[in-house]
Length: 131
Image (cartoon, rainbow, N blue to C red; front, side):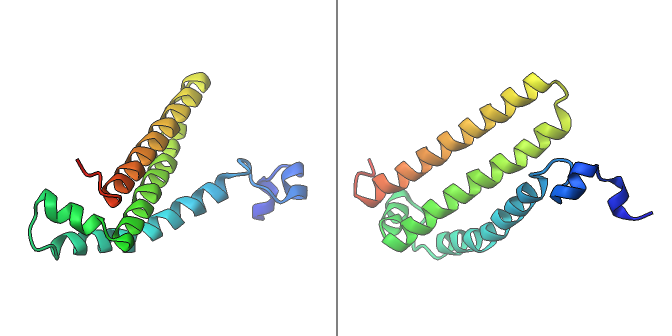
């Protein structure tokens, strides 16, 4: 039995799987996970190399354009990756269609809100308004 025999006729013609966007979602989640590896290592090594573990040292470090840019990238990729992962969990374990849709929308809004708050916080420290 070939693997193509399990696909619908329309799926065979269009070349799509049953979910049509599952492959893209899977790949994007894996790419964001891959991007988080060097970003997390950079963040951990940067914190470990600070002369002191206090607020002043951290804000001075974050006022560097390179550190601020990489921190913003880390925040954005982290929350995008989290929203993708939680969406998969909701799709797998929430049975009611309405509740599932509402949960996915809520998670996406919360992740977007937290990404914006994190980005604005980094920008605020970068321009000198840390207090």
